[in-house]
Image (cartoon, rainbow, N blue to C red; front, side, top):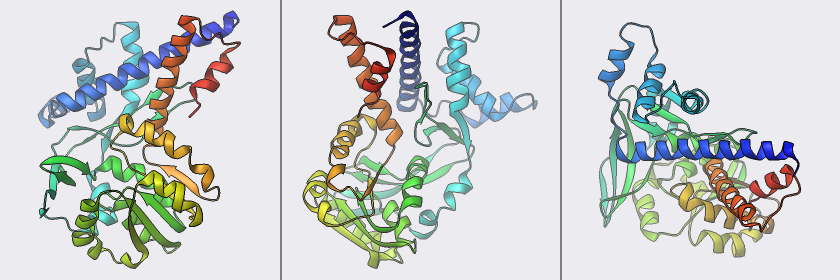
Length: 331
């Protein structure tokens, strides 16, 4: 590589370092102390009207993450990463969602499984959408805060949370809901949110749901499906997603496939790559993936770490910066 390309590589290394730093800070925050910020803290900081609630959140998070605005690198993290990723959430927007308004999920127990309502306290931090990825590979996971208490349904298996239906689930399904038409297949049932939303669309002829767990299917068919007005459109198939995509789906002529079989990017990235490799078997089907940008972020980070290791070990000598980018973005 020439000197100009080496400068670009140095900048890219710094970008990936910052991406990782923000992701690590958010992950630790959300796992260990997501409710450390309280309404009383925000009210105190905004009482004089000199700063907004969002600005108060950024200030508190900067303190939690030990970011010092006087330090150049920390200033970049606050200005270019933390500030644009923080947002306030409108509770009414989600409570007016058709699924939330139509499907009644009181406390339900069915064998080892349970559906119950859980709550976010005011100003509890939550991931509230898909990762935003910029052309320079800067990444921003959106961190949202409700100003009021927010309730949402959750499925538990043996007392352990198996899945939830939170704002991130609603927002990150929106693209696939808007795109749905004709014959739709979705991988992963959960609480049936996607199946419900697309079955309500006139342009959707049928919705096939592929789910591996018979217990989840039973829970859904006993307590949720009967509440769906267009349940006649919905067909549940008890099968492995990848076996179905490989052996059955090519003969079904689906218009859209929505894949949602993972909890997060850590377990989803390998499954994402595996399903992407099967897309060619159904060339007329449009494939969409839940939290795809988070998955892409994970894959790119793994690719980048491998490439840098190969360069350091002398196993890879890129001819130019473009060759590095091509390998980073390869799924």
